[in-house]
Length: 569
Image (cartoon, rainbow, N blue to C red; front, side, top):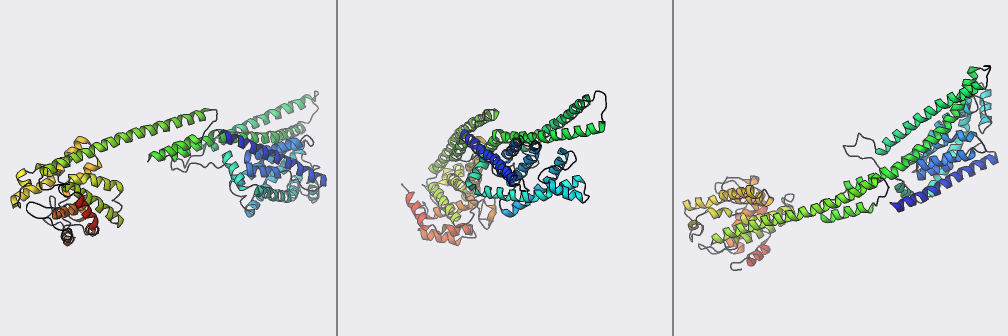
């Protein structure tokens, strides 16, 4: 921030000195050559276009101030040169100096500006035709019976149109000679690139810079108005005192006083506009620009990851704002706050990970308890969890249920899957570990493990707090025995199709496949091909067809999992 301030001062000083020098050089040159032109505002336009309105106004006012020592009337035209800078600066900000066609549009504004300039000339020469550049043209027009004020305006048009056309084109050529990189860097340093909030909450509000400008301008205008009244009254009283015997024409005195006050108003108004513009530049650089930078970085602050937060904090620290006022204090406080928030998020994340790990450990322990009671299943819960994981990834690769199968979803599915048979803990050992086939009554009791598992996990959620793991475990435990076609073979709710949660539909395939390939006291394990053939046959009846399609492509993966968790491993 300090280095940018130093660079801004160097740039601004160089461009203002160049602008004033160019105005004086060209103004004196055309005067010496006797040309019917002014060309004393090219430096003003160029400075305003490159450096902004404030430097341009400064160049315009100082030019007339310097020339006023040789021609006192130049003091009063300072306001006109200041307005020339304002028009050029606004036009540049609006993109009118991007190409030559747009530049010529600005000429119309300068022609309109010549009208108040003509009125000022009319006042300065006290309603008569003065001896100045356009004087000859005004005299010629007036000889045709045109009133002096209108002759003044038309005569000035004759000079102003070619003068401002040449001035604009030269200023444009000089502007284009400045390297684009330097122009953009200067715009960044000056804060002219600041944009208003486009948020819905701010769309009806003006920017801080605009609000300050209004306050300064209208306050200054009020001061100028008061100064005008005071100068008018003071001058009039002084003139009256010059006629102690009262031998004066009050109408003439009022007219002289009005002309005098008008001159003072013109001179002071130019100074006022320079002060307002300078104040706006100061406010922009010392208040609005730092606030804008802080606001922009806070809006972009990335809370979603450690690396994102670190980068955001680094960007905030790189702002290095040193304004020597409350803005700097705000910046220091903001930097400290975001660092504390980052530390708090890190602490909270670590605690959440600890809690999450605790939940996973509880789930794993519950699954191990169930598995230890069921003497027939061996590593069934581990294998089915792996089946679910690889099947979910394959579905996503094929674009099936891809929106639902995020990394978080698949991770949760893998953790929750081992609890699919937790309800079996409620089943009597005699039925759970019966070496033969269950009779109908025993099978009905065995089927209750789905509802029992759901109730157990529901109670666990109330005790431990709701988590994605437990919620998905509830769905899997409750619905993994439902049939896709909704037939009576499915239990416990008789759901069908997409009524069955995706996690349960995935588990249904994994659970049946593992039961088919596993050795049981009442049967030998089927070969993988045979088991996959049975799964294929029940596609569309027992299982979701899309899930079966993906499952059948996992032959090698399934074999790897079976070998990894073979009985005894």
